[in-house]
Image (cartoon, rainbow, N blue to C red; front, side, top):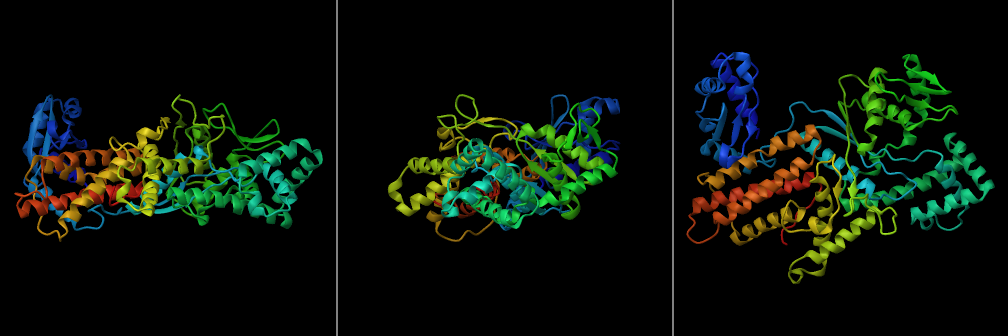
Length: 565
């Protein structure tokens, strides 16, 4: 339900009737208790253009505004704001339609796009660590959201599986005579052992350098060993994805090696476009206004990340035919992507119509404000962090005696993983945030557990009712009105989030919905004696809409709900 679209359409008609020759300024959500459900504040902007007093303009607009169906009440406030209250009968019908619809009256896009979402991107030389968390869950959320709204979403996991270190790793793997899976069970230890061998033994180092060349030359023996290493490394990643309920699969992997054969073509095509310049033996693209060139081939003939990224961009734009490409990568890579995107456009690797977006994000910090590390200063493995979340969640269950041991394990999994994901997604993605177990596992505040608790509480209402829900939604109470308006704003929130790629808008919305429902539930009894059947059925349906909104919102965020807590 696009309330703003309906209201904006009414203002377009009002402008035409009032013979105001200007583009209507969009209405905005208002603080319901003070300023109505929505507010139009464009009169002041039109004042200079039309040479009239803002309140005079607001009066002309109101006189022409159709208030016969959607709008119940209007008022002019301050220097020319128009406050709007929606009609309860219209809200009742709109909520009824949402209740009867599997998608809560949230429509699919009229014009679907093909969207590539590049996220997670672990390096095969090491296990995933906390630095991969934000890319993985922000990217998955955006992919979930865009899919729900009707886009054709292509998930891409651009893993680092190519480069000089792999000669060292493959050479060391070849030397191991025990089971390969056992050797790579701890990737960190394996990498350190290979590096130590490389630094201490010149003959091994030479062999490793030789293997780099052989891998890049598609030597069959080296590629077999390389593939074993990649397969087992990917299994580590898939363990994390499964724990996080992230939808990335082996089929979504488009590694650096996938583009390797095209890198020479990238250089040739850039040269043919006349954008390459040789600088100190390296091939570069100099961009106007930038002091640092984009190096695409080193003096020794080697390629860089920019070269591979250009090949990937061309593949996604020309082969996949993406309309929009999102790169969910650390904010510190902003300059790199800005330059690569510009090179891709000026070289015609990517059509001008394709939206290229770097979805940057900040860093996870510890309580002292420093990047999150182990006590000894090492990198925290992501799987270890998630295991700790589940352990702590188990301790947070208030009444464990209500559940079997198996149910406790399942609850802890849902609560713990949900807490980690929600805490991250509730922050403006561009900001750093402090990782705080107590805060993220709290039963109150803007946390996953607060949302899950509200959902479970509504399910308990349905269990007590234990009968079919019939009748119609009838909005008569002020809190019912506010709740209905809030529920019908969900589609607008999802659309805005999809445009801004900012999942925290969804979490902020869910928090508002749940907080408002808790007030509604306390002040408007549903099952108590004395509540007539019409009111009871109406409120049960509103409660059902709230529960389904929570569930859908959390589902888009990749978080599960539970029926009991």
